[in-house]
Image 1 (tube, helix red, strand yellow):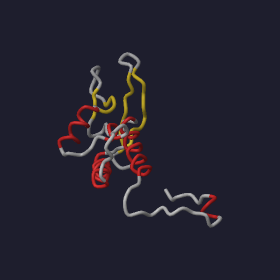
Image 2: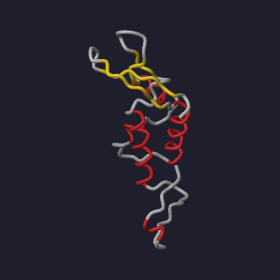
Image 3: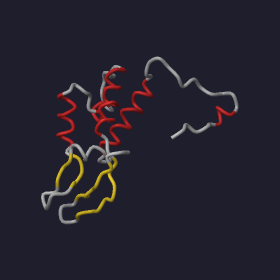
Image 4: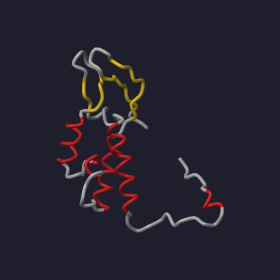
Length: 126
């Protein structure tokens, strides 16, 4: 998706958006985006939770995802939103690259009322 032209861009007041290191706003935006994708079940294809009522995807097994990331020394994004010590740029980019390898967009949700969760199917290519 291309970046939209903003008012300040069109009127010669654009802010520099290229930097050599991440600033705090950019770092938090990345952690927020990755955390949102985790919460939105975008890792359920590789770290799936299955419905106890049958063999279908029922979201993401967050514990498995967190343990897999921790095992590789990759920071778990939801914890970074409240971290006191900011992560290094390298740690942030490790998390981005990890997410790139395992993200898959959930589609066709159907609510399973008996178990009170949603069933998903996934697109590997997104």
